[in-house]
Image (cartoon, rainbow, N blue to C red; front, side, top):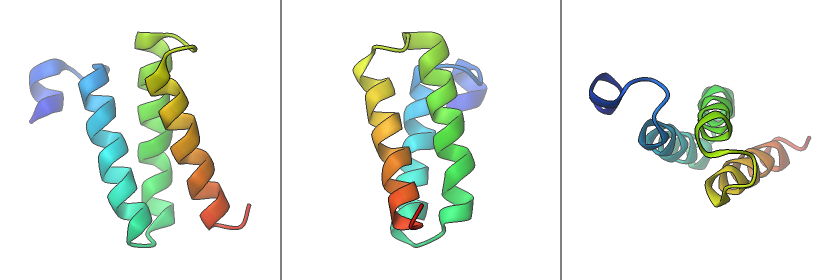
Length: 71
């Protein structure tokens, strides 16, 4: 719904993707979480700039997923 209302590249869509990825990660569904984290990161970098705190959050969450996977 959020994506339909705001468009696919809105920062709020990125937040939703990030939250869904966090849920999937907590459930151990790492392969499903990865593309959502990556998309959220891409949206945030493009819309907010590379130095925004939300970009740092996305990078941290992606790193946590990789750590969970032993990478």
